[in-house]
Image (cartoon, rainbow, N blue to C red; front, side, top):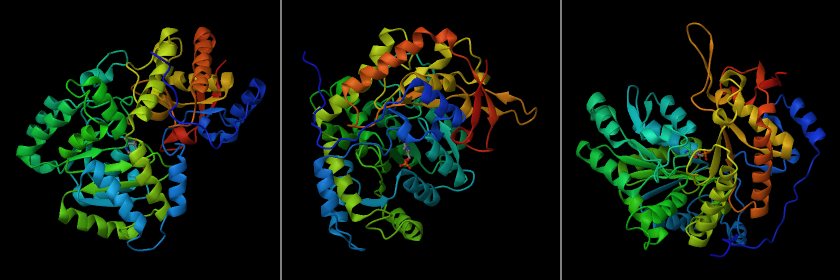
Length: 458
Ligand SMILES: *Cc1c(COP(=O)(O)O)cnc(C)c1O
């Protein structure tokens, strides 16, 4: 088989700047050993997130010029609505400025104090908006999802027995909706099978509990279904998407992921009464129902992006380039969450750096070393992000895992960029015993990872 290539050529370029190791060591020290505090101009390869970092196509930029900026009922809204309906099939399409705005509106309208909302794994903004509406956010991933090295073709699946048990335990009247996140971002970008969605729907239906899909990476999920699920290989991505969403009553979407744009989102539902209340809330904080906090040009770019993301040559390149990076470092012995997910590779820093205890932030130490070595920005998902203080003793407690996430922006980097990243990771891996932990010198009371300051231990 020939090399799978980037299915595009490059019309506009954005220079990136190489720095020296000495410069980077000074920069990271000034940033308090926190990569969120490093200027993007001082980063060579930025793998902090795949959200809002996609490169738009010539057609999307043309759409930006065609955008109709009429306040009400603009032409761009109807193009957007047609594109969303054509893929997802829902009756009501409500634009929002990003995914979390859709979540806030959905949970405000559907949830009240004491409710319970299950999901395979709630993304952090989903959990926060659910809890803000007074509901309890419950994660029900399958057992394999909690073991980084365990192989499973659909490691993002929900544990359907646990879902049935939850309904028995708390009662259907306390569960206003169930969600399923495709792909499961917080669980390593792992896909959910059609069979699992079908089974979830069958469990919910007799109780009258609606199913909503957190659709951020719906096309990547559909690609995995086509590759891995029995009987799906001959179907088009669009057909697979149609079936995925046919089991759902609505969805939330961050267009910053699989709509290939830099800002935007939407909320969909088939429920006329809910849609009315959702639009009322939308007007209060987002805008008129045909723009919802976006410009007409943004709606155009989303409409085009949703069509482009379904192309099989794009999806093949996308998923293969992520696994290419995962395979290159796995072959050298680097422990990662297996198998590689759709949008990111997660290095298991606890397995790679067993000599650094969790309270000395092994994943952060590895992320810092990757920056010092090669100017690569990744993100720690470990004790710095999820560590807690014991409410009684005040003692520091570690996070559940020590991961370094390398998220791949869509259509931004080429194979040689990924070769460079793999080489840098392997070099760091080969001298891993020399890496030392860190200590906190400042932390904010909430979401400390964004602003924390640290220093290296000698
Ligand atoms: C990014 C994301 C969101 C939130 O979307 P924003 O556009 O960042 O507000 C929700 N769910 C998942 C799974 C995501 O990846």
